[in-house]
Amino acid sequence: MNRDREEHLFIKNNSYGFNEYFLKNVLNPNVEIIIKEKWRKLRLKTTVWKIFEEWQYLHFLSQGFEKQIFLKLELFEVIL
Image 1 (tube, rainbow, N blue to C red):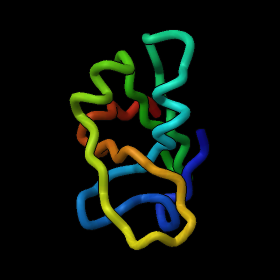
Image 2 (image 1 turned 90 degrees about the vertical axis):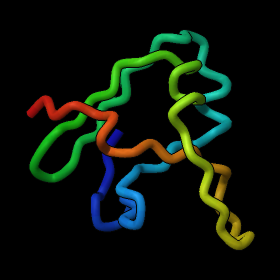
Image 3 (image 1 turned 180 degrees about the vertical axis):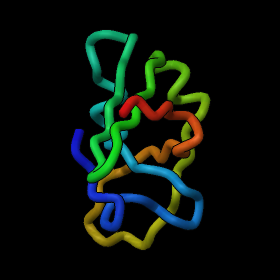
Image 4 (image 1 turned 45 degrees about the vertical axis):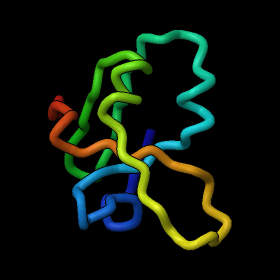
């Protein structure tokens, strides 16, 4: 999953957003999320159930955005 830090990182709480529908409908409950930033890679190995324990919804005005779950960067490990 490629993310542009300047465009996708929610700075107020230092987190990345992920599509809620996608996460609720994955076939394998064990997931590995890898985020490729310009200068590093981040990885989170976990289960879908754990994601829904650690997530945070942020409420924005209805602007056509899909519902997202935000995961703080502190949950990820730097792998490169």
